[in-house]
Structures are given as structure tokens and as C-alpha cells.
Image 1 (cartoon, rainbow, N blue to C red):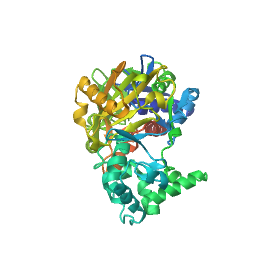
Image 2: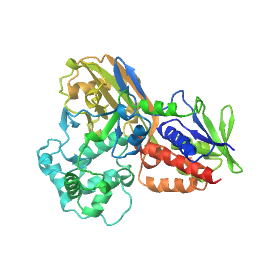
Image 3: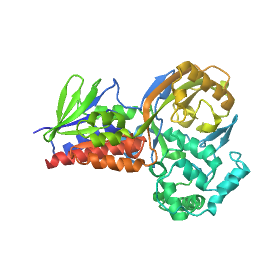
Amino acid sequence: MTKRIVIVGAGIAGLSAAYRAHRLAAERKLDAEIIVLESSARIGGVIESVNRGGCVMELGPDSIITEKPWARALCEEIGLGPRIVGTRNESRQSFVALGKKLHPIPEGFYMMAPSRLSPFAATGLFSWAGKLRMAADLVLPRRSDAADESLASFVRRRLGSEALERAAQPMVGGVYTADPEKLSLRATMPRFVEMERKHRSLILGLIESRRRAARGGDDAAEGSAAGPRYSLFISLDRGLSVLPERLRELLPDGAIRNGVAVERIEREGDRWNVFTLDDVIPADAVCIAAPAYATSRMLEGVAPELARSLNLIEYASSATVNLVYRRDAITHPLNGFGFVVPASEKRTLLACTFSSVKYPGRAPAGSVLLRAFVGGALFPEVYDMPDDRILAGVDRDLADLVGIHARPTETLVTRWPRSMPQYNVGHLERVARIEEEAGRFATLALAGAAYRGVGIPDCVRSGEAAAERLVTALGRA
């Protein structure tokens, strides 16, 4: 008898779940039908690449980090290995904007603390008072309890306010678009919690991590945190949308149904009913790969406690702005991959990637593709601005910081409402409750960025784990 698995959401987590369920069912000789329901007209979720003016523009994320292996492994498995591109070898550095100057991030500096002391001493990114306060980390005692704390609390305690304002907030904010006063350290940067526990000093821990990496030692427990390693970032030759499109090709014809919004999910005996606007779809197993707030709405009738826990996960909205310029219109050498902007600078920009410097093949000769980020948890009012005001603010900031005094030849503003889950203090405990509640149903699985990682590799992993759970449960039925 055919078993039907319904997957709600065709972002990268849902597509990974669908592909893995399809493969596992075939391997285990389980007669299974896979149906993916997607409310929008396209697949890929926040992964979206377009070609404008000869440029490959990423409207959402632009990179896969290979330190977490799951997304790269999936690309290799589905035949995309030859289409993987790495970052350019030249100009592998990034900057922090202070005033009207871009300061290179010191060699060996990792998120909030240095692993090399001489580049740190020489940098103009921090004042001497700030450097001395950061150096106090070498003698401060470790924390005595294991309770979760915010990124802001941790960095102030170990390294001081300047390290938070000029390094940790903009660098971590570029990943999570989050408020550091709320962001859970344990959920986002557990390696630093472990460093304090093991080495007492973050600086000593980073120095030891760098030494072990140089010796070829296994320091995976600390994430090889010896400073930025740009070689870990990869993309695909025509943009990251190549990945979801390839997954679509590998699923059975008609498996993905676009424009189908799920209203609610109900239990009937040992099966599920998935209610859409126009239909009721019976299912033997369900994977929900949607934002936590949408998942909460779908499940509030069948699992009210689970729905309440899901609704506690907050979200922030952000926007990307792709801009194309003539190279001769920019005075900055663009000798890096981009820059981040501390919130204390009060600019429109959160960060900017020099996309056509970072990856090859992103812009025609003589042109430069830049990608700006705005909004996030700290500046929701910027996200709410009309496009022309966002573009005007980005123009002002780029004129100050990289010397652009010409109009872009192409612009594209893309908004992502409530797209970034906020891993606030206590997040791991919330997720543990969610997993416990969801675990009461053997044929229900949750996947996506809301739970244990926001990056593409984390979403791939969560989708694959959901598929394994559901196929295993159906195989036992």
C-alpha cells in the first residue's frame, strides 16, 4: 500500500526533505508518494538568484559554508560538484566601517577576539583603551555557571563594550540580523562558551585553536576558530538557485505543487489531513518546513502546546539591495569581499558584499556588483521605508565608504518579511520543548531555520533528518 508523505514548504529544508525521503523510500523498498506543497509561485524559499544586466544577483543568501558539510555533500551527491565555485584567491579580507573609513579586520581576528596579537595591536579598528580592555580577557576568571546569556552580556563581560560595538555586533549581526542584547550565545556561538569553560580566556583559546590548525590538529570542537577562513565559502556558477532547481528535477513529476497554501493540519486516527484553501489531502506522514509562526498556526488545533512553543520564536525582516556600477565610478580599491557596519554608526547599511569580487562570473568586465543589507532586528524602520528611500540611504553610505559618486546602472531591492528567526536567550530550551512535543507524533517532523541553525547547511541537515525520521516511522508501520 502506498504511503503518502506531505511536505509543507519548498524552501531548501523542504526540498532536502523531499529528495532524501524519495531516495530513502527507494533504498528501503517503501512504496511512497512525495507531495510538496508551496504557497508561493516559486521554490527555494529565501534562496533566489536572478540575472540582470549580465550580472548574477543573489536576492537572499549568497554562500554555503563548508565547515558544516551537509549542503556541499548534497551538491556533490546530486551532480552539482563541477558547478561549485569558491571565493577568489585575491583580496581575501573584509572590513568594518567606522566614520567614513573601512578598517580591515585584523588577520587572525575571529568575531570578537584576536588569535594573533601583533595584527591586533596594529589595527586602527579599536582604540588603545579598547585594546587594553580586550586584553583583560587574558586574566579574567571564567564564569562559574552554565546559564545561557546574551551575546552582548558575554562580550561586555569578557572583552568590553568596544569589542561589542565595533566587532561582535556587526559581524554576528551580519549573520543573524539580530539584537545582541537578546541573541543567545549558546544557540549561535557555542564555541565561545566552550572556550571560556576550557581555556578560561577567549584569546588564549583562539591562539591555541590557531596553533592546532597550523599543526593539522583536530580542533573541530572549537570550530577551528582561528580567524576568518574565506576558502570555506562556496557558491554555484549561476547562483544558489541552481541547488533548489536541481532538487526539483530529481523529484517525480508533479511532486511539487506551487500556489497551495496550507491552512491547518488535523489528526484522524493514525493518519493526517492537510487542509488547503481548496482541498483536504490525506497523509501518512507530514513534514512542516515552514517558519515557526506559520507552523504554529497549522498545528494549533492538533497540538496546542507545541503551537504555543513555536509561536515564542521571534522573527526579523530584512532586505537586500543589489546594485551595479561601472568600475571606474568607484574610488575604493575593493580589495576585499565586503564590509559590515556597526549599529552605533546609525547608517542605512548593515553590511555590503562586493559580490563580483567575492565570486567569479558575477558581473561583466568593467562593471561591479555590490549587494547591500538593510533592516533587521535593530532597524525595522529602515525595512519599512519605500524602495526609493532605501536606495537613497544606501547611495549616501556607499558614497561615504567606497567613494561612489555615480548612479548605479541596475538596482534591485528585495524584501524578506519575517524571514530570519531570532535565536534569543533561552532558544535551545525552547527548541528542546518543541522537539519533545513534536516527538509525541512519530509521523510528524519539523524542519527549517527556526530550530538549530539558520544557514543553508543547517537547513539541509534538518530536512534530511526529518526525512529519515518519517521514512523510518512508515517503514515500521
